[in-house]
Length: 259
Image (cartoon, rainbow, N blue to C red):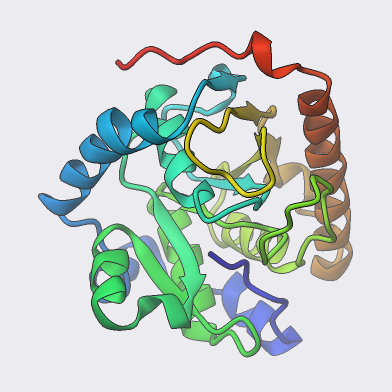
């Protein structure tokens, strides 16, 4: 999974003036979709079989911080490839709909893997040269009150530290909020921590969900400065959540009951 990099000023202007909701509805299905049969099956197998059999104890803190409705971006730290499975696991445990949309690198959308990724809500982005079409699609999804998953650090970091966030997540959120009055986009910071740097069988996991960040609070003045402030605040929250995780010993972990 990969976060988008910043777009050029021209791209930002185009994003802020993106199409209306009615126009979006005619194009979104060609860019990303959630299979009506594959997604429920994948979530079922992951939640009740794969994740419980692989990991030890899983604790989720802050379930109440994921709203049940409305456009939002889940912004998790990135510690392992398992993150892409644990984020939906946590979202469903928090009674969030399982039609998440993932922004992934274009290399992950090729071949058989790409076939599955695209039908489970993934859509590609070139991390070095993100196209305006891809960025606009992210805005389109938020306009339709969907939930995006974007890893703001970009790559996987196993040292437990929060690394510099890419500015794309803030610019995407701000552009979506500016495109419709009172859209109400939220960014949900999520910190994922494993008891081992390279998760293997029996590894314990803690998922700490922070309070939603209201994007409209940053939607004033210049887009560049607003994005900088939003990115800075998101970084601080992720650092706080990660620090709190390290203070919780493994033996205090409690399993989330299967709902």
